Length: 81
Image (tube, helix red, strand yellow):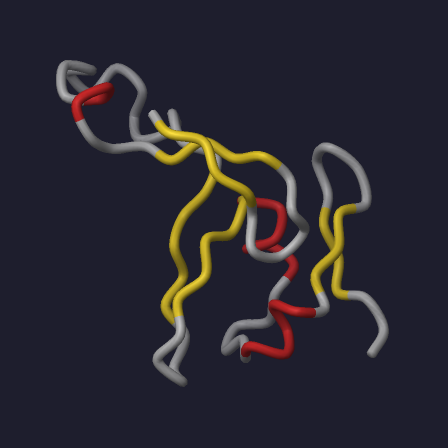
């Protein structure tokens, strides 16, 4: 697994994939990583932690991603513009 930062709130996240997860045999049920890349309708893509994914609306825009902020280790929210 590699480490990166969330494009929304900046927290450190782990990204599943590559050789590190090759032999997991499904025991993790896909829960090893703490982030996913979200591709928006405008063609941009953003690496977001799960709390940030939960905080954005159903059809997020780049502005929604820029407004994300970390509240604590478990929660993110959309900040004011």
